[in-house]
Length: 41
Length: 329
Image 1: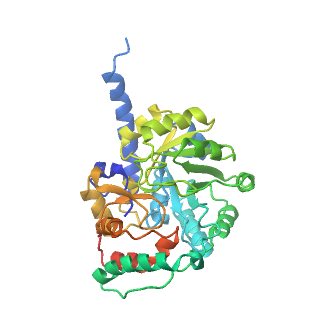
Image 2 (image 1 turned 180 degrees about the horizontal axis):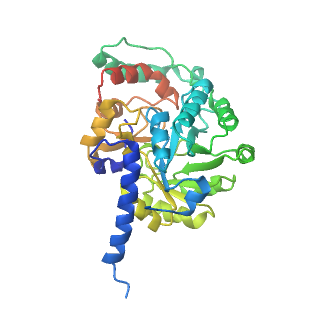
Image 3 (image 1 turned 120 degrees about the vertical axis):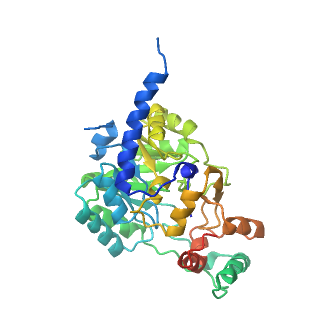
């Protein structure tokens, strides 16, 4: 049973298209919050 | 519309820079088509399929979606041509089969002392199917293509991505003319993507955080990060390291569309990140798997491991019975 160390991040059994949609949503949110959390000036 | 666009999207003709690994027993036409349909790149598992099965699977993907997809095929030196079972020392075969017999006994199947069957010599004909079907993306695992293979793909409009686990291998595949490099960090599940078996289980094990930026700096090609990524934060981290996309395996094993048996999906949902180990007891090549009775008892037995993929063909009855019995140990 192959599995990577990301196994601890996987807790649900959605459809694969839902996974892609969630990844895009999460990545966009992560990019936005990154800008909010880090002060550059 | 919500976009997440990088240069990889233009290269591969996809909407999102998200790739699903072409994992054996997992990545059939349904999973691949769902990922591609959603805007990522689904990659079909091509290893262990006959040329007719591969052609059928490719055509099935095309029935399900008109989006780009990939086919994964190994080029490991031990299967092209496959290692000869007759070359195995008698003593090694006996020790391996004796150890496997303890698992056969637990599963209630007959013991076996025979030499393993050869791994079928199918890689070159599978490559011809990829060309013939004009597959949009050829994903190379565990291998470095010859320059003429790259040229023949490009003549037909097939893009090539090659997965590597070390900086040296990244430079070597980049020199062949492939279109993108997949940097496989040691967090990744499955086989270490090398074309020669590393000297030890510690070799070719560099974490994504260190590996990805080194490969980005070294090759003048788009880099896709793999290993340790299962959510959107991981994708953003990969982009921060200089990658233009991310390839995910484990996340897609645990989906309704994956071909993995239910006990494997269940194990992924239940287990944490400390549950994996690197073993070569399953196939003869180092791979990250969930630790179980097989990985632990095989290592403890002191038995040798046969060359790839004869270790796998020697134990095929054990794996088949365990799978049929939904036995995850």
